Image 1 (cartoon, one colour):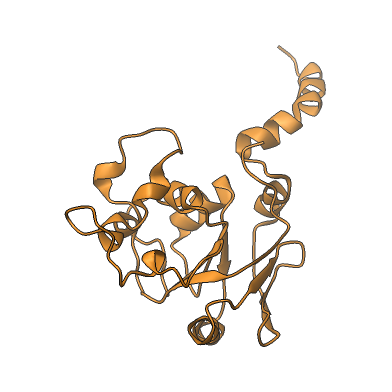
Image 2: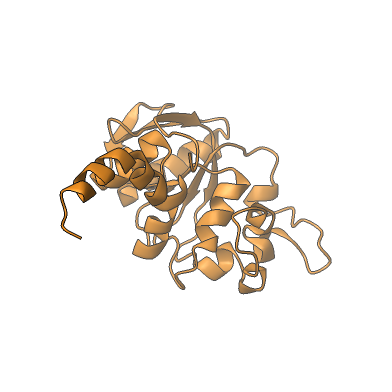
Amino acid sequence: MAYDKFEILKSTAYPLPIENVDTDQIIPARFLKATERKGFGDNLFRDWRYNADGTPKEDFVLNDAKYSGKILVGGKNFGSGSSREHAAWAVYDFGFRCVVSSFFADIFKNNCLNIGVLPVQVSESFLQNIFEEIYKNPNTEIEIDLPEQKITLLATGQSETFEINSYKKENMSHGFDDIDYLQNMKSEIQEFAKTRPF
């Protein structure tokens, strides 16, 4: 299994209401040397999280002890810029299992879906409601229901549905990446191969 199965996630969230967050801000290029998915979480938003001497910037949300959870709520156009999949790896490795925004860059969105991070796109008005509730109470919980494709702000009961490709939805519900999906169909593929001429 490539990653944990995703069904229903209920969690508090980190608010990052910055628009046009690009992949170089998510994981700076100087940290792209590794080829495995491990360790990238330490450098997620590195230049926003830390000073030049390595000390944490107290005013950055990931360093603020009042926020926690497995959901990152970002501003519009999250994940723009280069196609580096390391950006999605960093988000996952930090511990996030869902990113909520009113718009995602397509490549970042697909990279997330490939490794078990669910990108949930909501309306601009609902996104603002989420930010307001989190700022009002950092312990506010959000429920992400993948089977029903529904996101709910539990403090108010407000909810919206979201779109997801059916293939990616099935994979996430089983914790499969593309290789796992094919491996799971191995016997069917072998049987089909027997019917093909050499």
